[in-house]
Length: 527
Image (cartoon, rainbow, N blue to C red):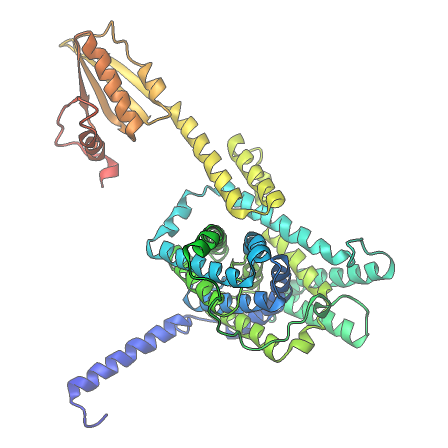
């Protein structure tokens, strides 16, 4: 370095500083990070990820390691590059439900290819900045989504109270399970009131594990579900025919996986934003989710998305940085490669109690107090989204239904708000001062405002307090103009905003109206 010219030395020094700053920002070392909290919370999340990843893989008809590898890759990539520090991603039930028929009919290789294609779609959505579309999701929809998900998390734990044949446990086995679950819940609820030095969930899990291990209590463990022993995720290019026929098979599944994954991830991001009172980047998260799914498919994983349950475990433990997610994913891999024999002895009762507390914390209890305060339409949307989420287990469909109904209600309400103030000036010109939006839903009410036969020869329609929104509105202007022309009367439009005039110019083949120029007038939408 000493023999380099000074300018080159400075250039290299500048580049080193830039790379160092990038590294620091990437791992949040520039922020005040409680490393003990981050590491311990990451360890807790890793323990909670194991049974869920196994369960989701089995739901999809795949091997447990397929789910565990997906949890590692998804969690690691999104923790480093995602748009929301502290949010946890992994193998999820939403994705498992989508790919189960594909895995059954075509095999795991098609699943890997589907996950890769879904990842490409998600990354494209991020690059195209489509994350902002989450602004269109109303709050009642988010309430319904969260409440439905909380109920699903709670109901999924009921399987631990059944035997292999699906019958409910009875006798000593039931009492032991209930006691251990109750102890876990009690510790998670009570320990934070005494001390928050160590995450209560981690203390509860380790305590119940120690009780079961040292007292040799006969209860269900992770090992009773499946073995988690394995190596580093193997790199594997899907062995499928690279043909248009294959694409036609995997494309519909990939599109649904991409949509479900983005919706669940971005909604989870919004929820964590509210809890932490910070703001994440939806577009950055979409790109990271896509990259994680691509790598998941290449490293023998079933893909996934953000996990609201694990994200809430993480944030409730006080984790706010990327480090917790990195620790969780790395520890999960350590469990797979080196600690399988120990982790398989972990009692399911401890993890059941943890997830029950997660479901309680996930549920928006405040939403119940709004039933008599919110508009009935919002309450209907919230309840409907909750029911669709619970009974269909289709999160994307639930959100879509909620958004569509909310949009229809909004359109209906706004359709009734259009009004016309009518005056006649000293020159005998009649003025219709319109206020309220003119769009497809309000054109019928708009047309009823005019008295074509009895009006004077000159009419001015003033849009100072209104807005021409869409093609239906333009056609309504065309129709009202034609009605006046048929009886020999002339219509002028006044105070149209620039975008409204642009709409009229684009529709000049369909409509001929006279627009009064108003060079000094501007509307707020033009700013």
